[in-house]
Image (tube, rainbow, N blue to C red; front, side):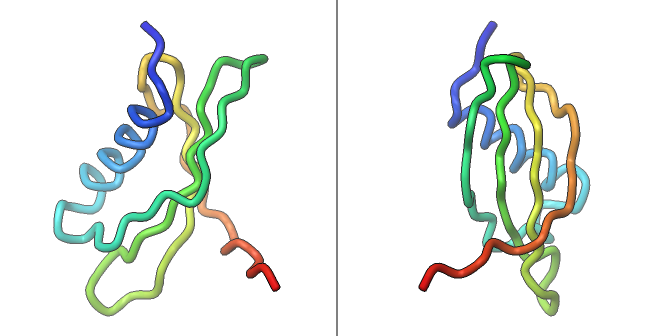
Length: 82
């Protein structure tokens, strides 16, 4: 079974809801979604506020073709475009 980018994004969002709680994942936003044909995985770069009084955090989530989370990494915020 092969998922599409939308389903990969939903898997990433669901991961944060499961690990942080439904109300802890505020302002979940997708920054970028790409697919690597060589290793058959989706890379979802996303951000969210892990609580009411916290700063936005950025993550990269690798998702396989079946929607399974392979790896979650905290990343630096993207560089603003001029």
